[in-house]
Image (cartoon, rainbow over all chains, first blue to last red; front, side, top):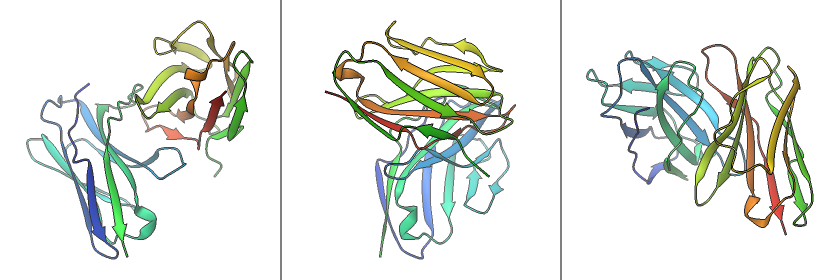
Length: 110
Length: 112
């Protein structure tokens, strides 16, 4: 599976959009981009995933570049409860071994 | 909807004791996964099952670790004998067909 690169940490003001980047330059044609987050003392929480088209759900939006070598997770109106470690993972549909890496620690500031 | 349920949430025991961690997957999910998370190694897959059958146990660290899934709604991860280096947070996850994995809130294990 392709590996990903994320910034180790980011800050975002409460109420503003949080844009979390991820590079996955070695992604294969059949690999999806998955985003999870882990709030302190909880298990990883699935957020969103996509193959090539942009995706949106009630939690976030996922923007994937046309060449699929990078993506951005957007939390449109960040709240304090969005403070967490965000993981970008690439893998085939129904991937069984998710490689979480070190993720981006997002801190939402009041 | 009930998510993945793990028990206990916290376990503290002495070295050499047997430890049993439990997991109830989301109803209808046919895959079940056991992960371990430590500061040093992050989140690692230990073993996963499909339709109650172990498919890949290559992540199980040693013979001291064993996992079973006697039915579609229950799985256990056992460590016998336990050692201090087994201290970690153990997560269970489940999924159905080609959908993403959903995780429980984990068991924080401390071996003294």
